[in-house]
Amino acid sequence: MNQASARLTLRASVLVSAFLFLVILALALAGKGLLPKELADWKKANDDLSDGGLIAQALVLIPLLFAWAGSLVGLFLFKKWAAWMYLALTVLGTLFALFNPTVESGLASFVGEWETLLSGFILGIAFFSSALEPDQTA
Image 1 (cartoon, rainbow, N blue to C red):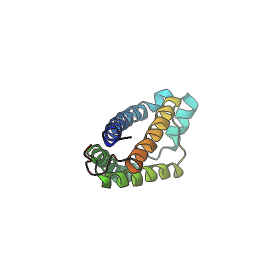
Image 2: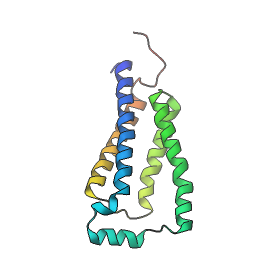
Image 3: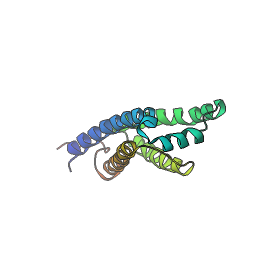
Image 4: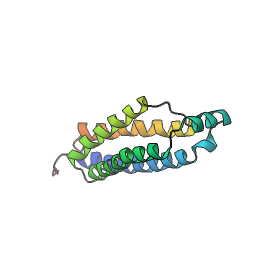
């Protein structure tokens, strides 16, 4: 794949990833309506959203979201540092699954799996193509 094709593919993938994040966010906000009653009740009973828990989650997640958005912007602008940041945040994001059980609708899981696949694709282009190399003249 030549550099122009790799860069176009990377930019398109980054845009689709940002869109999928917005879809996942919308599904998370509407999530309880997409779950069967028993699972929605279990999720509500096990969510620790007390004032302290909510503040702690916000203190962790908000900087990570800004870092993730920054890595996407950096990848869109073909910065090598952004690939390393995106890799670190992707690994960190997958490790969050170890902390608590997750209950989500089938649709949210479907979109999340596609976003995970796309993340791997973005990392593959970023590290194994010429997309982030200095400009090449053809």
